[in-house]
Length: 59
Image (cartoon, rainbow, N blue to C red):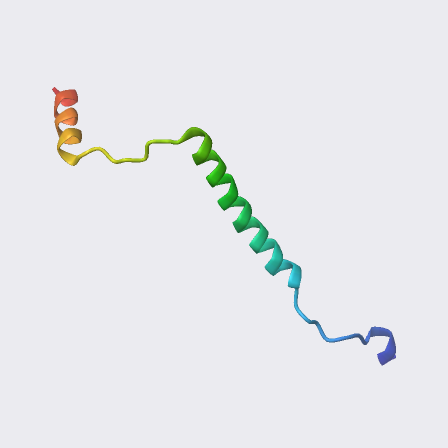
């Protein structure tokens, strides 16, 4: 009876680790490609300009 349901002890899921690595690498590669093609301007405007614009919009 034990032979029927017996088996090796579980050794974990090595594919889970590799799939996590693949996901992270693909996200970084995708971001790199997008930033090389589109070259977005990610600079933040100075705080003073933003507050002046908000005051003008409220008036």
